[in-house]
Image (cartoon, rainbow, N blue to C red; front, side, top):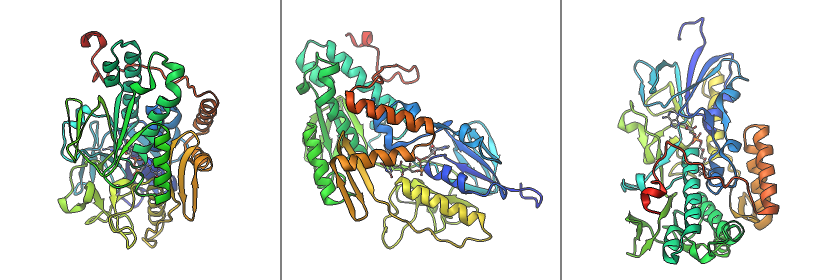
Length: 429
Ligand SMILES: Cc1cc2nc3c(=O)[nH]c(=O)nc-3n(C[C@H](O)[C@H](O)[C@H](O)COP(=O)(O)OP(=O)(O)OC[C@H]3O[C@@H](n4cnc5c(N)ncnc54)[C@H](O)[C@@H]3O)c2cc1C
């Protein structure tokens, strides 16, 4: 692909916020582009917790890559999971094929990090992909249905014991959604279950929830979680989870049958690079132009890129805005004759929602709480979603749920691919 008559071929691995924005901004007259993703759709992680809590269906926050790429000339999509890069031959390999590249953009994001507690891989619930969110949703619904049939109060409480590890935005949002279920939804939809049958505990290693946000936002979120009957345990980490018992760093044990892990992430593993290429969290070390250390034709963007600055000495935050801004900056540099513009980050702030009318937003000098923050949160997420149909769908769902507290999405559809939960008859129920 390197002859003078042909355009250079850019392969983009991962069509998340970074990959997709890079493709949109790249000059299609200068480059042929192939997008490779393990899924055939773009997903929207900030709303995964809404899938898990039956607030939205997965289709409303996903968008097929082929629908997006068919609008762009010289861009094609191929599904596959990239496992290996041969940097000498300039090829990437998926489970289906090997592909040549002239330039490679790696934007494969991150996956869960269990910090060596490998049994968690099989015993806990996570929220790093649409499939994981659906799996958690099914588990919650399955437990509610079983608890509603259960005559034994102590067994009912065991069935409905939830612990969420990590009080960053994802942990707070999941715990808040479970709290809303306990406080508002249970009575209407599962009258057989008592509110006190459900326990929700949120565990955080530092001294406050949402520690990357302002102290006021943390305090407000803490109060909101209290209103939603979530027990928050601070300054404790989980050291072990075995036989449905979570052991904390102070030795305390909490019985919980559903443990949601949101406490750690690590870069997706792609083989073929020297050890020195990776920084903390298995992220590719990049320079201020997002070029991977040691290579002039390979770039990394977003969550999987490790770039430091005076302000962010431990790396830029793994957030959507960083991914989007890096992608656009890299595309502009690649579109030009040479790399002129180093990456500079415009922090647009951060926000988290704990439930209906309960959210916090730090938008530079503006700090919002409660309903104003919640409306802002909804607006920003709506405009960020891909596809008009998705935006309308989500808006209708939210408005409907706001007035009725009800959603038609609490459907328990067992998929054959995830037989983790044994069937009721096998369990002797
Ligand atoms: C539950 C949750 C909530 C979040 N909430 C917020 C929020 O409110 N605000 C915010 O700013 N950020 C939030 N984030 C973080 C934000 O989603 C990430 O920073 C952002 O998605 C990073 O973009 P990315 O393109 O680097 O990676 P991703 O968006 O993760 O995209 C990676 C893509 O690569 C694909 N992929 C991965 N490995 C391979 C492979 N080997 N081969 C092929 N394809 C591969 C994946 O399928 C995916 O499509 C949240 C994250 C999660 C998980």
